[in-house]
Image (cartoon, rainbow, N blue to C red):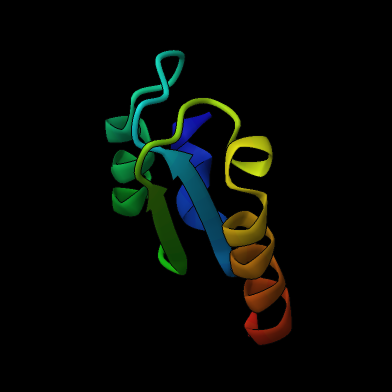
Length: 70
């Protein structure tokens, strides 16, 4: 439920493929309006599967997020 999202206080990382045809990148950007502690990464030349299409970048962002999430 979108109304519950502002209650999330933990750091959130959204990694989105720019050319995702299933969930448009605008959906990820919309989340910026609902979450107070959010970071979004948009990977260019990427579709629905960032972990498979750009594994090195994806892993770097996830590990950085986990190490620095406060």
